[in-house]
Each structure stands twice: as structure tokens, then as C-alpha cells.
Length: 261
Image (cartoon, rainbow, N blue to C red; front, side, top):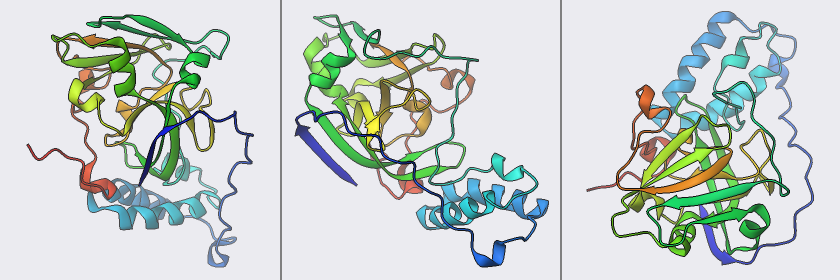
């Protein structure tokens, strides 16, 4: 894990080529993939979240090769490590860029403000290199993130004394999430403008998304459009459907972020 705070925003990086998949091992070339094997590995993918990083890392390599040689198509259902999956709770999401993107900070603050993408890019940036863990079992290792600390935005807006939580809204007009104020002020919680060494793409939730380092991915709201300070935590989209409000990953992601008190 690396965290580098207080660096000045650089010039926009050139887009890099997509990472090429690993070569298929010789023993797999031409060998049909059985349904039992695929379904068995699906169960192991979920088990990897429980049993720790070592097995998940092994699955990342094994399943990546498997997907390239799967005539059944079943491996598309697998929680492949080292690969992002693309989720949306709506049929389509509008595309926004520097010409029309806005982030509104409101609620229990002294200075409500609406920020444009160029304004966010001009602010002090923080670099993180941390895993992204989905609650469904897959994980992407050592993802580079870059953006503005959420704590810095909250300080600039001036949180009122009665403010206790932060509610996030998105420009898909459907998704919401929340954090306590204490959680939101962590150094590994940022409003992300870049990931994987380039601006956050639309599919990844760009041009601006939330990244909550120590929690499962559903807390890292994509297509971020609003930050509202509230008097109490309000259940987000998935919490209203049974997910935990406190989504700490902890030891299952090779980390120890779960609060001790």
C-alpha cells in the first residue's frame, strides 16, 4: 500500500495500452473446460474473500487463464481477480465531461459549493495504490488511484457542528451511498479523478467517482454528482436491500482496517 498526499496535479497523462492477458498455459491449450470445474472455481472465488489474499491471488491467475479457453461461456460468470466488472443499477447513464460535469456539496455546511471538473483537477491531489474488493468475491490488486481527499472538500465547505454523516448521490439519478463523518475523513477516502494511470472512464464511473479504500466496492459510488452533509447516516441503495452499512473489508483483503472500538 502506498499513500502520497499533497502532490500538485500533473498534466493529463497519455492513455496507455490495455494490459495484455497472461498467455494460456500449455496444459490448457485445446483442453475443454468442464462445467463442474467452472462451477467449482466459482465457489472458490467466493471462498477467497473469506480465506484471505493468498488463495484469491492464486484464483486471479487461474481464472484469468481459464476464461481465455472456455467454450462453455460459464467463466463469464466467475469473479475474476485482477479484472474489473462493470455494474450499473440503471439501463444507461449519461456521459459527462469537463464541459458539463458538476459536483455539488450541500447540506449541513457553512459554504455550499458546486465544483466543475477543472476546479477539482486544480486542487491538491492524493495518490493511493490499494486493492479494489467487490462484495461478490472478485478483487483487483494494487490499483493506482488519484484524486482529492474527501476530508479536504469537507473542510473547504465547513461542516456544521450538527453534521454527523455524508450522503453521496450520482448522476445516474438512482444510486446513493453514505459514510459516517469519521469514515469520510480517512486518508484513504478520495474523490477520484484518475485510476489505473488515466482519467476515470465512463464505465468505471467517470469522470469523477468515490473511492473508499478500506470498504467493499459498493461504497465507492460511481458517477458521483453530490456530497451532502447530514445529521445521521442514511442507508444507501444496497443497504436498503440488505447490505451492511459498515462495509469494512478488513483481513479478507490482506488488511486490518476494521475498527477495534
